[in-house]
Structure formats: structure tokens, C-alpha cells
Amino acid sequence: MLTILTGLFTSLSYASSDLLSQHVTRATRAVTQVVWVLATGVAIIVPIALLVEGLPDRGEVRGAGLAALAGVVYFCALYCLLQGFRVGDLGLVSALTSLQGAYVTAVVIALGEPVTPFLIVALALCACGAVLTSFEGRARSTRGAPWALAAGALFAGVMLCYAYGDIHWLTQTAISRTVSLAVALPVALLSGGAALPRRLRPRAVGAGVLELGGLTLLTLTFALGPAAVAGVTTTQFGTFAVMLGFVVLHERPKPNQWAGVVATIAGVSLLAAAT
Image (tube, rainbow, N blue to C red; front, side, top):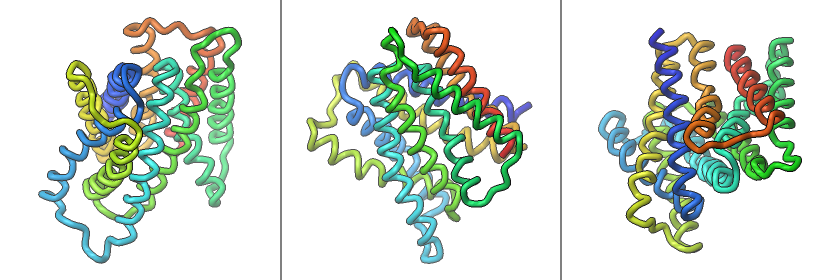
């Protein structure tokens, strides 16, 4: 029961962070909000990691390198995600981004993981979901779909870097977030600055806290186990985002988009249960 609760709170935390980030991004720029989210995370996680784990030793060079690579990729992923929110609906973009699980599974299969009928069904659902959700027709609510699909692929790369790392998750997160900020800050400064109006700062910082909280809860959920339950519950941020977008933002996806969102969420959940 505790695993289910922490897993669902993980998804809710990520979806709530996305909601706040969308508001800030639409009022400013995606790269500006990226800086504020990352800076908030670094200010919290780096002191904790140094206090608990200290600096990486020589035997952790490979893990530190993968964490640094994850940081570069994470900046690109977060930028694509927020660009998607800037032009598209919260629920649609979040649902398509959750396809990161499908991308990871495809890579693992390509590396030699046995393919089961269960995985085939899950991947088919994800593919159908992406097509249905991305079909615009006369609506204008799918403009963020390409950004969301790119974000999902990049987040999958981050997950793979984390998966093959061999250092403590606190150190891993601290390194990757610091590198992400080191990349994001000069990009923001060279393209117009990273300043936010005072009225937007609470939401920008709140999004950063919730995003870091989602990562912490994610780690806790998998520590509590079992992995199948943890995987299913922590991939439901797309579900919460659809609900928040519908209730809070009054988003109205077309019927085929609702079907795509449902198929995507079902496929991601099946993938999580199978891995």
C-alpha cells in the first residue's frame, strides 16, 4: 500500500510541476524556466549530497561521467518539454513525454532483451497512442506533440545513463543537475537573460521543488518495491496531467486525442509492469 501511495504522489508531483512550469513558460521563455527549475534543484540537492555522500572518489569516474552526460541530455529534454508546454496542452504533452518508457524498452530489446507478447502489446499501444494523440485535424491542441516526443526520447537517454551508472543516486543527481545548470545558464544569458518578473518567481521555484520532490519520491518508491507496482504508479504523471489540464486549465482534447492519451498511458503502464 505504501509503495502505491508514494508512486502516485511521484506522478502527482511531476504533473503539478509541469502545470506550474507551463504557466511560467507561456509568460516568458522555456530556457528561462529551465534555469529556474535546475537552479532550485541544485540549491537543494548539492548540499545534501555533499553532506551525506561527499565528493566522488577515483573509483566512481565512470559513474560520474555518465551522470555528467545525463546532465547535458537532461537540459535538452527539459527544454523540449517546456517548449511543448509553451505551445501545446498540458495533458497531451505530458502523455506523449511518458513514452520515454517505451523508448527505453526498445533500446533494451535492441541490446538483446528477450521480447515477450506482453511487451509487443505494450509497445503497440504506445505507438497507437502517439499517432492518435499527435493527429491534429482541425484542432490546434497538438502543436506541442513534436516537442513532447523529442522530450520523451531525451528523457529515455537520461534514464539509460542513470541505469548504467554505479554511484549513489544522491551523487548522481547532484552531478547531473549541476551540469544541466552549467549548460542552461550560459544559453539563457546569451539568448536574453534568466531574469523572471517577481510575480512569476514563486511558481518557477515551486515547479523546481516539485520536480525534485518527484525524483526523490521516485527513488523511495522503487526502494520500497516491488518494482512492477512502483513502475506502474510512477508512470501515471500523464494521467494526472490530463486531469489537471482538463479541470484547472479547461483543456478540451478531441475524441481521438483522448483515445491516444488513454492508449499511451495504458501502454506505458504495461511496460512498467513488464520490466
